Length: 481
Image 1 (cartoon, rainbow, N blue to C red):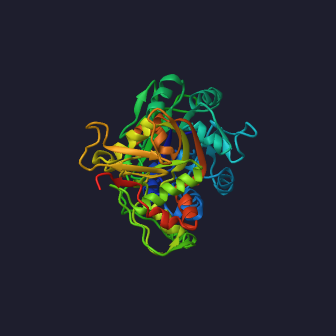
Image 2 (cartoon, one colour):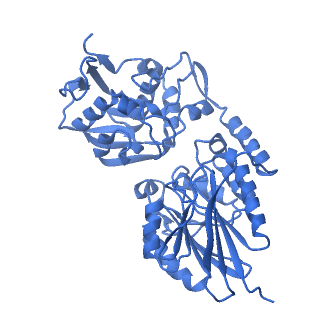
């Protein structure tokens, strides 16, 4: 005999960013929510950025630790975020997701070569729980120029989702979108799409204690780093009638919670990751100090690494990418990962001299070098001063920048920097998003150099003969001496 009332519980997580210390507490809280559902069906979904190569477990296993955690937690479907799609090659992703025990759902990423989704990705799925048909589609933020360099084509997510929703709506009892697009995009989708029961969100790390109801759609988000879990409960009177949302909220995850499966697995992945990253990459005969408020050898080394990798005559990088000095002696891959954890890539831009000068002047002010920066791949604490290579800068400490425009004198190849000339500059992708030294975003013709991260470039530079002597040479000199 068919039950008169049907209920479905949706549990969702997003933007865990490889916080492995929270994965056992998350699993324990999920178990509590499943127990509260009793015999009613439950669907567990993740909205992307589960992986983050700033974590030893992810870097040392190239994401396999995350796949293991997802499988052990028992997710029913997931989508990808930019941290999955843009920090791993297509080959690595294919190998990773081959071992995943649930579908990856994303409708706006295709292989450039074929124009089709990769074999491990579904544009949508229809899952059935106790005769309830749940249609699920998903989309991720379309950083098209970056995806293109990795062999992907990123489609407009709103158009791709509309197509999938129109296809799914007549076939299912509930229609769910996994959106790694950010809250503003989710709100637009809810206004424009019909028949969507819930948009489970991520990317902008928004935490909505209760869903925003827009056009009959529940717009949701469960924060970041596994600190919260979202739950929605839908009910209908009987089969054939429409489901309605009867409860929606986020739960705080108690970090002291634990369980017997994920906790030991996470510990093993940490141990394995450390072993892999114990590889020796260089041996140094001196310490390279770091000063995020001014010039230092380690900052100069990073600028050298970027200039040589980009093949430009000038490089500009922020010293805040580095989290401490480089010690003397054996340098391991794990040490470079710890000192330079950000999944940030080098890029080449065409930049006017006046924009270079403005950034250099800003670099001497506390408002900039101590500015806290969040997102866009940055895993440091403060922006830090600008480290340069290919430039010589004379400055007068008695003249404050912006007083008269003559606080610094900049030279390129022995010639004064021409404010109106355009230079080819090696710098960092995050600056092109107008983060930090915003005048650098006024550059044109950006060429992003994926997939190498800054720590990969540091490794190459440390292995180049003479690099340590070169980084000790001052680029910023006191013009009053």
